[in-house]
Length: 230
Image (cartoon, rainbow, N blue to C red; front, side, top):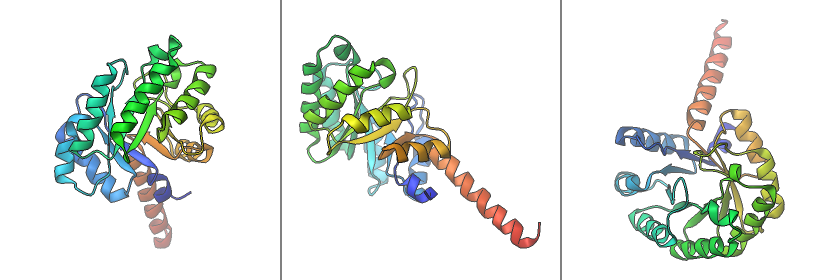
């Protein structure tokens, strides 16, 4: 798998609470240069980025990172994000609802937010590090039935990130129209390739561009060095 193929599946991400405009601009410039699937940025930066980078595919987060804000707030966040220029929404479920067995609440919330998204992409973060295998399987069915486009492993702010086992579990239990996004802890080129081969259509990471750009540079330098006789 080439670097270009990997990067085409990366949501180039910067969600730190201290993210500056200069850092966000660097992220966007890198995304355009390396042709990543999107940039994933805080909601407050969606409109400024859209105003400067009209052709950039913008992903943002709602109910992030804890997921326990009320449904009405999440619906409004999604509405405003889309009006501001976002094409993809990554929402966090209320994990407590899952723990309390209130899957119907989670279903209704996802369904309402997807209705707001219309043709825009909705990814549902279930924060796998806090769920049992049975809860993950149930969430695969809920996400599918509610009409979301993706199920996503993690926020990257929990106690652990994506695992290959979770991606494989998702693949067995989601519907045919649902894709998989892995996020959190995907740090090396081998990680990136392994998650894609396991079934992830998107990878959420802040490090892929730097990692693969450095790899490409190293390969170019090495080839040039050999040609020069070093």
